[in-house]
Length: 359
Image 1 (tube, rainbow, N blue to C red):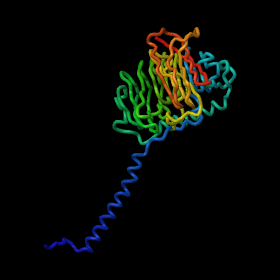
Image 2 (cartoon, one colour):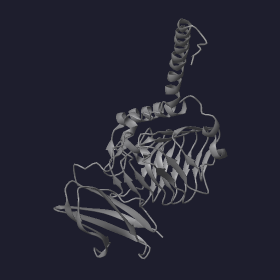
Image 3 (tube, rainbow, N blue to C red):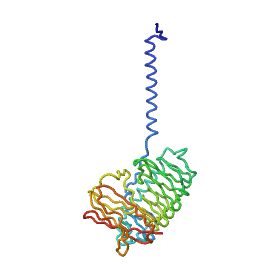
Image 4 (cartoon, one colour):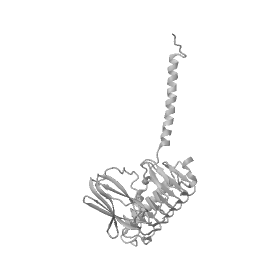
């Protein structure tokens, strides 16, 4: 049996080498483009603004009782424009430009000027990110993202952005980043939630708002809001993130504001190096809320709910628990509205925090 060749071996080798060069050249072109397309967003650098959960230009007002975990700052307006905060509402420091701030506040004009400058830098960074998105990243939902599930990316809205009708879900890993460029106002409906899935972190979500932002009654929001004008939270609204208003006011009404932590948030299952009881979330709440705590060593743990008379009304935990992060939900649907305290005892450590049930 004879085997017939269709071309000379030498010619075949040259053809193969030529084809190989063309393929390698094509790969050399394709690979850089692929990496450029797949390059993830990096978080917006907040600079010293990261030291605050609330920063405003003209006013910070509060209708008690709110729960603020983190620092509050106001500049350039005077400290007298920080109003309505009781002595137990802020776990952090209130900074003012002068000595006219509320009792316990700290005058730090230079630090606040720097923070406002860093806010301008961060705002401009978020607003100027390119390339300008197209397709599903440009005005998704025709400006209302309620009911949508959004992957990480740079989203641009040529008018206002609303979250109405249904919750919105942001799904991605703990290192993924979302940036929302909003050409007008941000409006979140009553009871609406921003839900995080797949490990997404509130610290990696940035809402750049050209005008003002309004969060509706009892809504649950995630991420850092950087507004050119004002930010308003209606009764019972809560945010894991930051409220940063460049020119105008931040106004609160029985609100909960919690520091989201650093942009490179660590795995919450890592063993803690100390005992910690976190503020319940949401707070105020109706009818249920989550209480989280960390144990550095295996301990006998007792977690109970106490009313304002000091009477225990519910025991949530009474058992030995291992070192690590723990959380439990208190369903208070059968309890009357009012202020309560939750008391955690683990070994020799005892910690108490206040919560508010509003029906």
